[in-house]
Image (cartoon, rainbow, N blue to C red; front, side):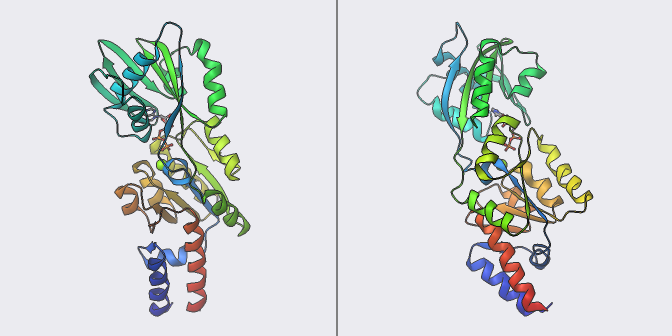
Length: 290
Ligand code: ADP
Ligand code: MG
């Protein structure tokens, strides 16, 4: 391996917004068998928006929104930001006893009532019956929406359906990786229904859904135990351990500092297609080295 070729390779990368943080990444990127993509913020923009709202009988929309926003004021999750934005015009009560429920949602006390908000798993854990809104929740999830369920005093009060636009080059990046013979997998803490729908639209057929933040790295390990060289692409704090575990970790530049610190390659333009660019550049550099 000539230091000159490596310098040229990493230099060319840097000009194109692909930062190789170590020389071994340049070599390892040529050996990958599988690329695992995080969903939210990596394949999607990570700027979710509330697109639909459904209330249970006897509940009104304003109270539902105000209560949800009160709880989410304590969270910095992208879904929380979508909800507080949507509720910008409603007067929101103060929440106390806020607790983040990792990978599932959050809880707090609002106006003396216990509020629980998050995904279906969280509702099931707390034995909250979805009742008449169960079918609606199913339909929204299979349409690719992320559904946030809001329970007040142990009863489902309503749902907020949230959508997050795909990054424009995500689909082309996946097609190009598959043409090169790489397997592509989506990993997410989001539910199976939503994740499968988004994956299908992007041309990904393997989806690891409902993965708790602490479990992303072990999923990478399982693939490695099957003899695969694994690249992981992510943006979030919850992706950091998986980025470290992967043979090559790629961080989205618009993501968190923790993700960038944990990665081997940083994609400064936050463009999923730059995963292809990084792999191509690595092959070209290595050809010059031998
Ligand atoms: P991802 O891997 O998609 O970035 P997370 O692990 O952060 O997901 O969260 C997994 C799921 O937990 C989300 O899709 C959502 O359903 C639920 N969730 C987590 N935090 C919140 C929150 N603050 N508000 C609403 N839902 C949440
Ligand atoms: Mg993410």
